[in-house]
Image 1 (tube, helix red, strand yellow):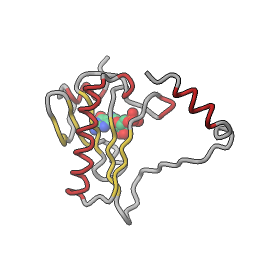
Image 2: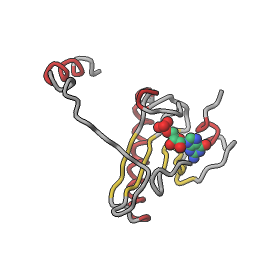
Image 3: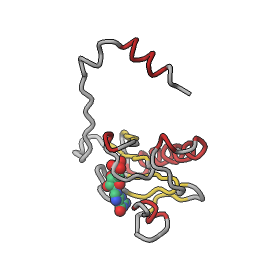
Image 4: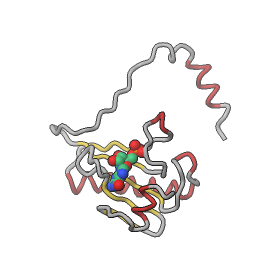
Length: 138
Ligand code: 5GP
């Protein structure tokens, strides 16, 4: 079954398009967690960032960067959060690789909260943890 972003790409359901080329589409997120919240997706289906071939991923990230700059210019954003969720545990709800580009504004209360709390138990062996990850980098 097609996911909702495949349906948007195919024109089967409407979206507010921000950018389009042969391989990449960007459109406004229906939730608008921040004003101008945009999703950037590859037209070809890949489940998430980690599974997307590098060349195409680079094209998606290039568009995300250009949209972030455009949000600053066009909307007067003072900052931008750029986020991609991989897997349900990370909050991914639509299984089609997408990058959230979310403009932020001074003195404007939006719907986006990102909280990073220190985890004492995870901090105990940073050298060991770094070595573990490092050993699997391809
Ligand atoms: P995720 O949680 O997977 O990282 O984000 C999926 C995003 O897709 C959510 O922010 C959600 O609001 C957005 N979304 C889901 N369905 C639709 C839709 O039909 N149209 C648009 N424009 N956005 C959608």
